[in-house]
Image (spheres, rainbow over the protein chains, first blue to last red):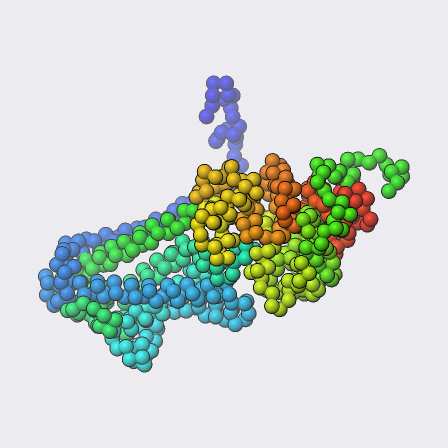
Length: 304
Length: 283
């Protein structure tokens, strides 16, 4: 910007001075890199939008109240997702109830109590590895342990226990991360005021870590909602015609039904699968925005 | 010290004058006060490296004791031995004794929760909890079991008044403590430490991150609090030690080089290292 008083030939303006080759090269590389990063982001977006577009295109015509109020059926016009949706809600509720207290408890022990011995390091390493174990492996474990050995059968409880195993490492690792982010000075201040370790954890550390813990819980519940493989392994039903009413009842899950429909001989079911995916995504978005809201409310006062 | 032998002394190598500290107690007065805290032959280790060597020092009651010395000299470590904050460092261990009112604080049956209620602490960097101002001050009594809201409010008012913060925050006690300025946060931390009704107040460079005006307020506050509490303050700032303390202890490389009444230590140090440090020749 040149003002009336300013001299016209400002040496800082672009093009005012002859650039040497090195300077030009530096600027080219700089803008090239910015474009590369933008392209990486754009390619993710394109894939996502295409996918969602295809699903909505297939599924939207089939989104109706029939879909929500009917159970699985062999005629596409009558088929619905009611039992599977309710089964999925059962599963994530139970999984959350079990995974959050156990996972947070384990993380608190590892971060706040456990002395840093080689034993602790072994446990830590194992938890990190468990987070990467394919979920079908947990399904096989659930089949052996919960379904057969413990005799829970193909119950919704056995399914939820299996999903709890799948998401526990996620909850533990995220909670540990959140606890580590709470400054040590907060713990010291609490101890110096005569608080016990438990009081320090309960009144200072956990509240300060809550936003981070919530993130882990969101991730974990979303994962539990989307898993189909472990449910196949523990024998969840597909063609449920009644709703699970207690922990011991049979159940189905949305991902299972989607998987079944997507591979069905009748192509109309492929479109139904699209509609079911839309419902699954809506449930996910609804839950996540609830958690984000909670996270915001807890987190807005905390700035170190 | 012969003044003639030295070249004309530049201001840089003159020890800080003990001015503005009219309330400083003399060596005789301090000799009358019983030792509130006493260290006897204290050695302290971080793992294999020894941080304190055979420290013995009496902290007289209702006096301000200042620890001075260059960075890494062990003064903060020694301060943290007095309320066992070093317990939280896994590799830390110590030999020797620290006594509070003549009783060992490192005995096998000592409850650190009880100890820390009696020996409060203010940290170098103000560290208010991410809660309201009122909640911060009420925290100590609350964890000690006080549930009565009116009582907690009364304690908060009293302690915030002691810490010279009440008038600034009385209309916004429920606002977040993190919204306060740095100087206000540090005074809040002092109020919070006073709320457990301690007998000893440990201050680890409480004004090092504050502007001069806030520093003055904290120093004035220390002068007012010493009639009620025994105060130990670690400071990098020798002028500050000269201004606020009755007794000064000089540490160097983990050893207590010299301790004595502040007036005497600053005007007539016995040890050469002390003299060199307070005249600014090293450290």
